[in-house]
Structure formats: C-alpha cells, structure tokens
Image (tube, rainbow, N blue to C red):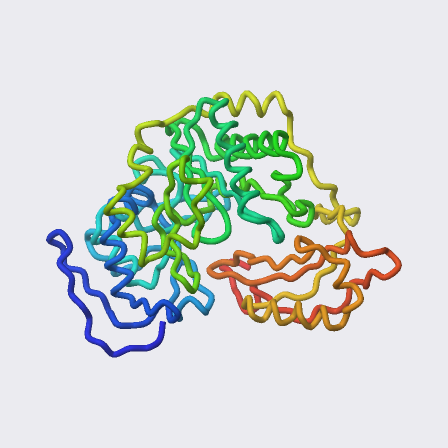
Length: 411
C-alpha cells in the first residue's frame, strides 16, 4: 500500500463509527482498488463473511506494503483495539498463548481491513469453546502441473467420502489455485481427533482416486496430484474464510459455491468487482451451513480400521530428523518469493542440461511460516534425472536465516 496523506474516512456502520485511514491508498494496482473500496466490499457481503469468520479468534494477516510485499502475521490483537472488537486467548502445546481478535459485526470487518488485512484467517473454533473445533477443513491443494479439471474430480471424490461418513461438505474456491470444502461438526472432539479425522478422510480420498489425489505430507513425494491437506486442521493453522479477498493482482475472492456450480465455476470469475453483485442476486450458497453439524465418529472408526499412516524414515545420525526417500537437493533460502524465483533461475542456468528432465512437480518453492512472516525454501527433486547426470548438493545460492538476531527469554 503506497503512502497517502488523504484524511481518514469516518464510516457509520450500523451505529458504530469506524475510522478508515488513508482511504484512497491503492491496494491492488492492476485493478485500481483502494483501501476504502475493500472496506465497502466487505460491508456489501458482510453476512457471508461473518458466517465464515464471525465469532472466531483470528490471526491478523497484514499487508502494510501492499500485495507485492510479504505480509506479516499478528496473532495478538493490538492493545488499542476498540470496544466492539472482542478477544479470546488461545493456548498452545508449546506453552505460549495469544489473545486474538474476535469480530462479531460489519464494523469489525471494517476495522480489520483498516489494519491492512485482505483475507480473514479464523481458527476452526468459536470464542465460546476454544478446545472443541466445530469445523473440519478440507484444502485441495494442487501440485504444479495439475489443471483445474483434476481439482474438480478430487472435490467430487471428497464429497462422496463425506456422504459415506454422514457429513455435509460446503465447497468454495480458495481464491488462489485450489478448492476448500468446509464441514460443520458438533463441538465435541479435540483438535487431535479433528486432525486424525481429516487425515483419514485424505487417505480415503487417495485410496479412491489414486494418481489424482494424495495424502502424502512430504511435498516431494506427491507427484502431479492434488494434495488433500489435512494439516490445515492443526491447532495453530488457519485458512482464508468465505468471501476473503486474496492477494492476487485481480483481487480474487474465496467464494462459496453450490455443488451444482463446482464443475463449471472458475476461480477467476469471483473478484472484489463481481462477488458483491453475485451475493446480492443469488445470496450465499453457504446460508444453511450451520444447520448441518455432523459427527466425526465414522471417520475416527475408519482411522482405527486403517491403522496409523506410514511414517517417513529417520536420519541415521541420531538427530531424529526425517530422511527423504527422494533425491532432493536444496538450492536456496530467501526472505522473499522474488528472491527465491531468482535463485531458482540462477540454478537452472548453472545446470541447463538437467532442466529438461524435470517435471513441474519436481521444482519445490515453499513458503515457510516463521514466527510472524513467511520465508522461502527452494529445492529440486532429481527423481526424473538420470543418476549419472544428477548434480550434487552444492553451497546454497542464498542463505536467509529467519531466526538470525532473534532472542528468547531464558535462552
């Protein structure tokens, strides 16, 4: 977001005054969308957005420098938050805790956007019961080389599994490359049970659609398939909720769909410019999502029948670290994605004879979650490169250390 000295815009939102600083600040340069435009977008679809994120503690994912710069993640609510922003304290297994924001109304949506948030990232729990999730999240994440048609095929397989388990799935575009399917459940199970149920569903989808879908957690082992990302159900994870604006140049929106739309809908159809009209004309396809809370009993029974998922082998040096079964080399660790892509191109220039052997899914550029921001790791899987021409592990082309300069009390 470029600097601006425009006076604040004071909005009266259902009787609550909310100040929007720098309202003319351009957030999406290609689409010409300002911060005030984003606020008005969220006000137009507030019922749908609050159905997805309202009443839940959320991580604030802030883009103070615009969509072309890395965001930072703020778990703790700002101390000077207004009285209409509630809070809830989440406690983690590590012993840490965070007092996070909880929004309940349209004024809360406007306040969040004013902080520089584009998408909403709530936890799958209600503020009234932080220990028992009420939502199972299925994230269909395509590997490079996977087209949209394959994602749709996997989505319908996932729906079939949910039907067999007595659960109702509610699909939406992720606003990026994949699809999400949300499942409301009764708040009776722990996070550990939720994640086990999600992993079991992923394994069953893989069993029913081998080659199309995968439940393999390690990225280099997935091939050109759709990863059914069960780990999004871990306690410290969040996903962009319904009607969230995503940091794409065209200002795409994570949009709820009816199952009848899934086969023909395309992510690029739904943007800040188009979603409000769709919402006004058609309403929210997820209107009844809270009317169908389900049970995890069938998935947990299937988990017992399946047995534990296969574990990756461990290194033989006593470190306990996981050892990849693939011939991986690491290329770089960088602070930003452009730096990561530049390092990758440099490596390709150095090893031009190898590049032709690589499949799309062999190139791994991963955003790694740090304490408050992302950093990037670049790796190459040499599984399709003949052994006699595989390059060895070399000195990294970039060595960004996300922990450099960090200090912890007592250490």
